[in-house]
Amino acid sequence: MLVKPRTVLNRLAETAEHIAEFARKFGDQNWVDMDEDETADWRKVLTDLEAAAATFRRAVNLIG
Image 1 (cartoon, rainbow, N blue to C red):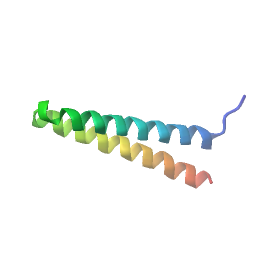
Image 2: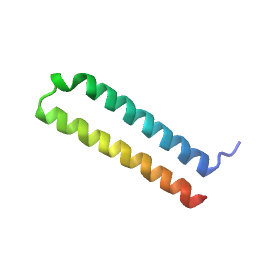
Image 3: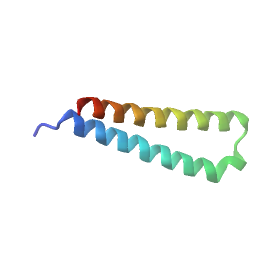
Image 4: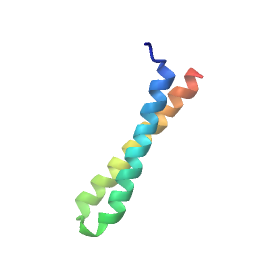
């Protein structure tokens, strides 16, 4: 069975969004225990995940 690129990109976008949401909740619960470097790393991870999700969504929109 052949999967359409749009479906794959939608699933990748959803996965990136779910992982970002999990990371955000994890970070919210654990900010107190993180030092400055860990906090900066978490914020970068969140930014990267959100950017990945947005990229996948844009690709889906371009495919149309």
